Image (cartoon, rainbow, N blue to C red; front, side, top):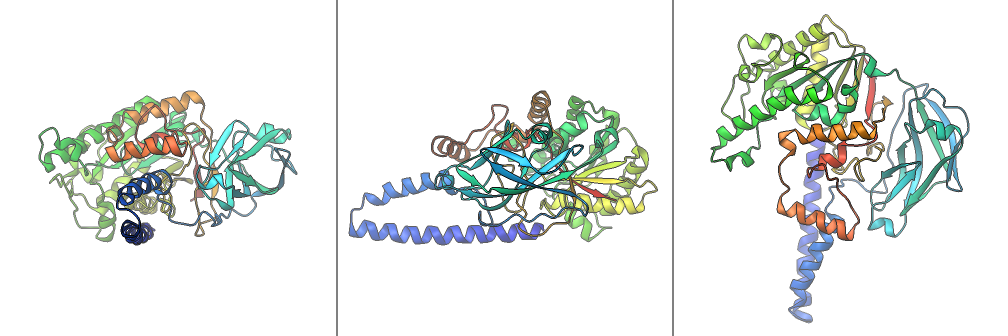
Length: 464
């Protein structure tokens, strides 16, 4: 699946290059036939238009239907949208996660401004030009829905009159023993801060130091390797310290110290050592000095797949989690994320302790870099699913305004999310604010402050 994202990105860039070449030829022709000064003027206007309306990485057509299957036996209720109210035929009492399948059609303004649906007190945004089947998240609004008084209206889009409500019932997984698998520092907070901060018993295992792409630290006068080592130390500290903000003590946080973007290669050659691409290090023990327990990989410090799997198996047996929170191997294309869940699966097979449930999360997507779309503090609609996915259940707990603020502050403590925006992105945001009506939160400049701090967290439920 990670390869698919690279293919989509290459196709996107190829189409952009072709469009740019055609545009330049047309501009040159206008300059010859009409007036030379039109060329720089149209170049500036074209660039502004691109930044306002065409800079999103959307690698599918907004007219594509999303394709979701739900587990056999999932309750399905017919629903209708009439007079600005959503009414459901049947009883969904007891369901904690409510997903509404309906058709959306963008109006003409919805091709230039982000179309969204206002449902109750929540807003959920979709692609400009949307025209197809989409899935709204109504979790947390069951009482108003049961009373037949849940208002629903489209802005810059029209809603189909008929819809289907999927009502899913789950145990409260926060009441069970949790282990969160984070490929990098901040993945646990992005995906599951609300969940782990109210869990009765949670542990967090971070797989890598996250040391690469450390150019910002070279401004301190460091060479590349030294900058990478500093970044790795800082993000290692983040992985152990930030969870305390959510109530998870250092005795339940583990940093395994493997190297960023090396997990896929490790998986293909399990006995081979894969040191850092940038820091010059190849001994994982340096990052493990503050771990609360000894692990098999501490014996030789070799950054190999074999050590990673045996480390995870030992952690399963030590913490004995009932529920594992880990990246979605089909939805999240980041190579380290896919490999993390693969390693976890192998560790479960090798371990004497057998958890019961996987809760899968997606911090990245193949084909839409803005999901969850819309402003921070709103709900999370289901992400694009153009190709079929496994028929997993869904669990979408809600976060209070207080927990959302705590989550934003947890992200603000992460060194990798603290850097200033590049000038190009800052200018793009200004243009989009003025011309496209987009807004970003005051809590932080990184895009994850908008995407991750929401009324919902979203997990796919896969029994083991």
